[in-house]
Image 1 (spheres, one colour):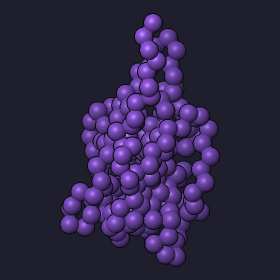
Image 2 (cartoon, one colour; image 1 turned 180 degrees about the vertical axis):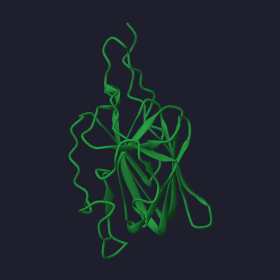
Image 3 (cartoon, rainbow, N blue to C red; image 1 turned 90 degrees about the horizontal axis):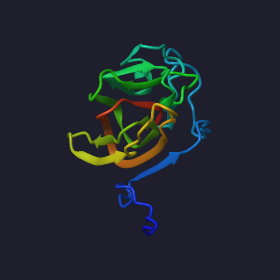
Image 4 (spheres, rainbow, N blue to C red; image 1 turned 180 degrees about the horizontal axis):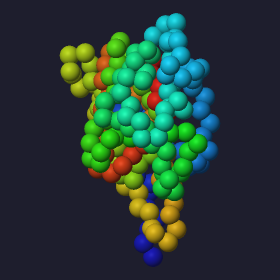
Length: 188
């Protein structure tokens, strides 16, 4: 009988400015500040406050670009979906994903931010890059690990809650070799 394996450390465990937590339950309890209203509502009083997008106001198959510009954020290469695949643990509200497989989803901020975070689901690792105002790379990270779903008993992919901090974040890029979803996104 082989000796028991120790739990491998995630590749980001030694990075001080990122925290990732795998969420085992499909029921999520979000405690972050959610800005009331939808993309068409009045903007917040101060753009430097904490803002979370839950994508409730988006319609399925809607390209996501300038809908949240009033809150100082713009998406590139993203589309709103409400997946029917049970591996993505169907949600009541749309999520955002890249418009095509193996492509980049980019999030731009009008003003530099100090931290970002959210909840991601994917079958393969999701790569995250944070950039500063002069296109300098601030953080490069991988979130999640390989997941396999067997056709006999499909199992939901794990949800990964992440939080990154760095000075002067102006752009976030997310990419993977397999489809992934961004369920919630926050910054401040």
